[in-house]
Amino acid sequence: MSQTEERDGERERTLTRGTRRVWNLLRPILTRYRLLLALKAAIGVTAAWLLGRLLPAPIEDYAYYAPLGALLGVAPTVVSSIRTSAELISGIAIGLVIGWSLVALEWPWYARAPIAAGLGVIIGGIRRLGEGRVYVAIAGVFVVILGAGDPESYVLGYVVQFGIGLAVGTFVNLVFVPPLAYGYARARVADLKGDFAEAADGLASVLQAEWPPDRADWLDDSRRRQRFVDEAEAMVQEARESGRANPRAMWRRYDASDDDADVGVLRYIGLRLADISDALGGAIWQEPVAVEIPADALDSLSRALSALAEYIRAWNTGVELDTAREEYAAAVEEVAELFEQNSGQSGFGTIVFALRAALGRLDERLADRLGAAEAER
Image 1 (cartoon, rainbow, N blue to C red):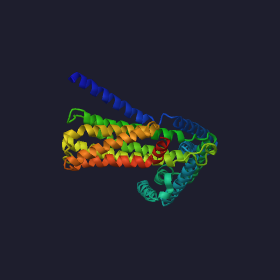
Image 2: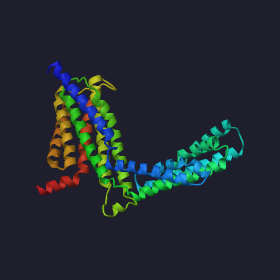
Image 3: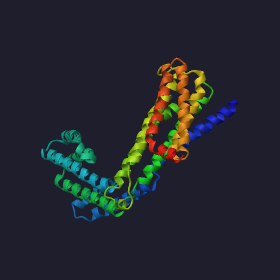
Image 4: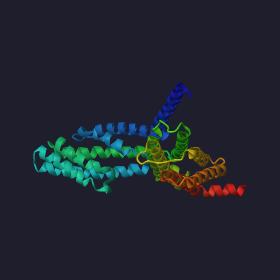
């Protein structure tokens, strides 16, 4: 291959990786679910501001707290909206009491403010306050600085306006019933399977390239992969929450256990792929420890990783699952035999373990589907 072709190939790979990273960033936010939430926030903020301006003085003077309350009250799910509102009211009430008490002591502001902040942060350590934890210190500091001249009016205006905003946000959430996030969660898990299959293919291509390869981007990808798993896990949890107290859930059921199990397997496979990446890094750059991989094992390792990618894709699509499993198992066995023939180098052994462990975890997860395929034959 000429140097020009190599440069063109590297440029294409870089562009593909960049496009994939941008898509991974935008994918969770460019959804109907997220856009509806944004629309509800806009409606809630506008309605809260208009209502806050209709209240009598001096409460009307603090109308700017109503949109803030509405913004915080609009949550992705009905249950989380109600829970968040209760937690925020609790945290703010505690902060206002702290601030009001310090103003009553008639200390100078440079003594009140740090004490309010310190007490607020300490009390914010109470985990039962949930989302309201951070607002203990904020409310306390606002009172001792902004409301010191007329603390009674400030506290009353703060509580009433913020409470109206939270009520409006919660009401908007109830009127515009949040969509169920089931489809988004399942789509994210499916996309993650595709990402992992590409990752295994990427490692296989490293082994097929001229050895030692001069690319290290696949090491960074392996470290980012667990973050993608965390995001998928959070989306599954959000999908589970979206069905609670949601009328839509009456005619559309969702069992999150399958998605939870899939995410757990993907997390495990991600760790094993990271083990393989580290071992390959040790073989190429002798870091973090030197690793020896026999030259005659590179092709077999590449085939095993490609077979792993196909097994993951078959898991995702359900197409030719038993065939993909058999090919991966055979490839793993071939690598294991080479390992035994080459005096069992520890770094090579790490890769063998990772491949076997991924096979075992996938077989365990897909046991029912593999059994059904075997029965049909």
